Length: 191
Image (cartoon, rainbow, N blue to C red; front, side, top):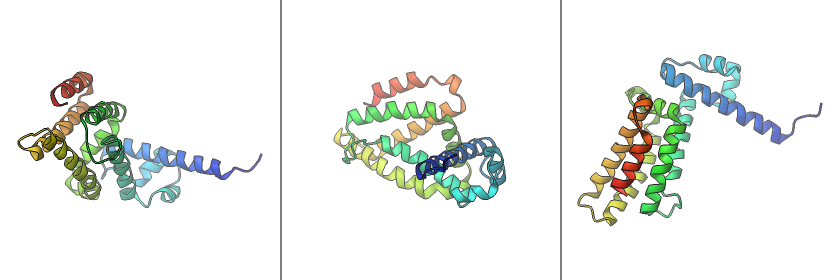
């Protein structure tokens, strides 16, 4: 048997890291952040507790990484060409993609909303979330300003609350929430 290459080791490392994160997401969503220990995560991920610390400094680091990667995924969809101007076409693209993301990553959003309901845990991720929300609100405000809306700041905040509400309804009642129809109505009304 030949020794593994650096590329193979990197692939193994990435695979293990993804498995840890997937397992943590499932457990955080099932049991809450406080009800999930590193021991539970390592046991379900089928790796040693000590090996967990080769990937993450601890449970808080793991949580911040999960939330950070999920939030960055949303941010990457917003203003995709990174020119600082949100066009109607880009906004429509964002709506289509965020609805697709919601459907694919329901567990992530279930975790996100469960965490937002826990003030002591929200503090751990608040800085990252605010760092993402602020530029999005600014781009939306500029978007509504260019559309000559009377109160572009409130329009931007309303849109953010609308997305949160849609996500919340879908996460907790996916079978009773017609995601595609809501998406089409949102595009028709706001683009």
